[in-house]
Image 1 (spheres, rainbow, N blue to C red):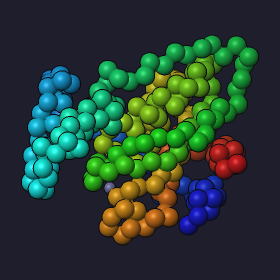
Image 2 (cartoon, rainbow, N blue to C red):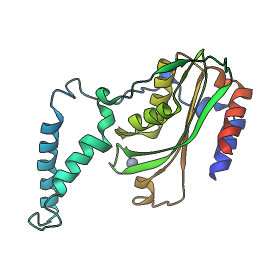
Image 3 (cartoon, rainbow, N blue to C red):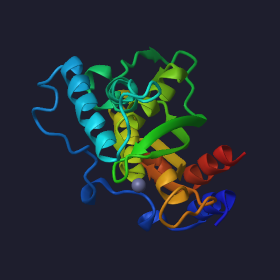
Length: 226
Ligand SMILES: [Zn+2]
């Protein structure tokens, strides 16, 4: 199914089997309660140690100039970049503004690019998120929407869960149920290994409040399709 076809499918189809209903879907990233008992420095040291062990087992010569710093690089990348969104301390703070101009229509930020990592293979998946909401009297700085997407992308993820996590965060922080999130992504665990399908794109959506009404949903899909 081509990308535009998928979107029109969402637009026309009764969505009950396509979006995620919170009641039967756990949106929490499975973390242990002691997940942040260890500081970042210790985590990086331990990850580097274990990653050099993996390289060793593969038979790589860690004394080689090109390889010797790889364990440290990977450890830093994991803790400070790829998986920094596991830590609630890194969650972006949202400042809301009074909606003085009384704008009551949809606000859409589309084509928000993101990079995440699939939690089943630890290889990247990447793509675009489209986010929409209807103001409940308050609005948010637009770049904050990008930051929220980025925060939830920076953890070992499942695309379905990431979609619902972003939507839930927006419902909470914008004080409105009228929120929509659609994510289109390419998964390297599908394209570079296994079935090796280089063209498929996975689309997920989480719609709440007014976005469940056919008219509002169609308008949203029409606007992100352009
Ligand atoms: Zn995967």
